[in-house]
Length: 546
Image 1 (cartoon, rainbow, N blue to C red):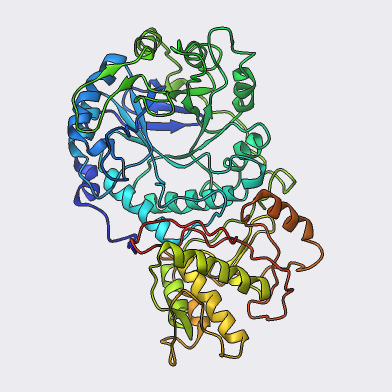
Image 2 (cartoon, rainbow, N blue to C red):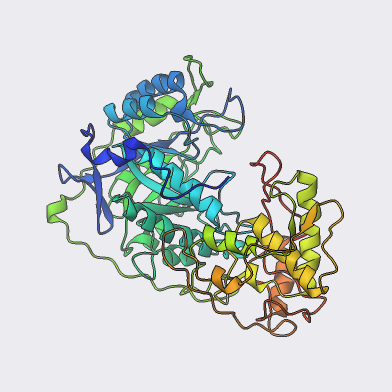
């Protein structure tokens, strides 16, 4: 499904500026959040909210469950929280009732931009126009609400040293979504939430706060589960180290998830430090994980979709007790003088596979359509079954092992991105099939198990025209320069590490020529064509061939 970035704004979103506000807006100054009206420093005292029990279908959206929302907002008020974090919603549904209930209760929303079907996959990262279009549609659906406090562009995407390449695509998404918000006259901050991995956390912390203002996140979140039980304290839990890491950070930081559940019922001793003198000068509060009891056993209540009944777990009263006892004041906005230091971008190393000064390109649906219109051999259908997707993945793996696939590939450690690297997985697959057709002197346009077709007279004969099409932000997308890489020698270590990881990193070798048929037979594709759109138009298919 294609979504136009400039045609999906709801009437409510366009009229948001004229809507009477029921809740004070929040603003960022330096490394802190403030209530714009009162000037008081704002601390998130929140809870993660994503009920799954009783869900019908595969798209959880608690903010569209009116019965559940009315039930839970009363509990939120009883707990004394001022914010919730929601990971997944269906932007096609109506959320007016729930968002109004939350606003009237003084509760702000932190909303994740990705969804499972439209997200950046850490094992096979790319940022394309389909994904960007769905994120933009979510922005359009929720920007009309006065209690939308912030967006989160990624949750634990890069979670170890073998998946750091994905951070480049998240940062490209941050750049493009910040630009998109600007076109709508919106200033809602965008952040990122990491998984507190000891090996890569400082690289991530620095990476998302280095470079130009247009590419940086507006705040940084840490998901942390180190403080387990009353026998642990601020120092032995590692919270002291985490706080030290963020002391000179130039933008706000908060705990986007916290609440170890190894010892239950939980007493939440970390709350005292988070909102007390140990941490409140550095962190802007946090989000306790989570509200509803699910299979992972982190919940404080048991509820079901569409059912008004509630059963509290042993954690509920404990959280209420620690939250209600808080009296954090902070500093007045008028008295606050921002400090902090600019972060230095991390360099490429064994622990960091991203050339920090180069980002993946802004997607261009027009460029990709033009490319598709130029193909002489292509897929007969752009929707594939799961079986067809797997077959195609193996075929593309073989093709890209015999010829250069630079034009549809990415190499984050070298800062190299092909001209069609931001096209969808299906479009990139079609490009590779056509490349094979050209290299076999127009003799081979068949893949057993997947229907292909020969186009005798393609609509577009000059691919140079494709390279000057506007990107999805309306800018002329300049052709990308080919990047140099030795196919057989200098990058062999990268290939070995990729094969050991069992996943398709973006950092594999390539040839600078997009049409060369002389690539080594042992060469590997630079990325995996995962998440091909299946017959339903929504099923993500992981292609194990990569």
